[in-house]
Length: 229
Image (cartoon, rainbow, N blue to C red):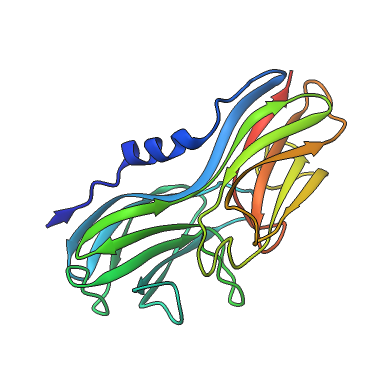
């Protein structure tokens, strides 16, 4: 049995690129991301991993994929996991031999028959995992006139480099839902790491949520909730 070294500590090291959070005016209560971690290859055709997904109000589950070599064409494995919660999942398939060759493990937190969206990836080489990419959006500052956020996208053939993105500020504590207050567009040609500033007239004691979305405004992949002090 081979166990990868890509764990919580590795993710924390990668997110050290995010600027220090300034909490002026904002009380940040929840942080949402899409990521894959804690991967254990149990056999040639079996692995377990932890999926961390945004608990948006309307999302009911997503797909975990395994591609050979790169994200292209039909995946060898496409398995649906229902529910809004994050957790440990298992994939078993006789279509893969994880101890031989290169694979890409990928996850999309939304599902439709028409559109596949991948918001987190991990590379697998001969049973070992490396190069984890997540979708993350964290607060930098919030005031009554503007909200500043830092974002990182997982860039891939069905992710940010393929789809444009939006950053949306909404009223309410349900992530990815509520009355829209402000919106900004991020071109797929842009850098996958950046800072966004949205100008709006906000209210004290009001709870808001900020989401980064792929393909459409109802497909959040990361973000956070805050209450303006």
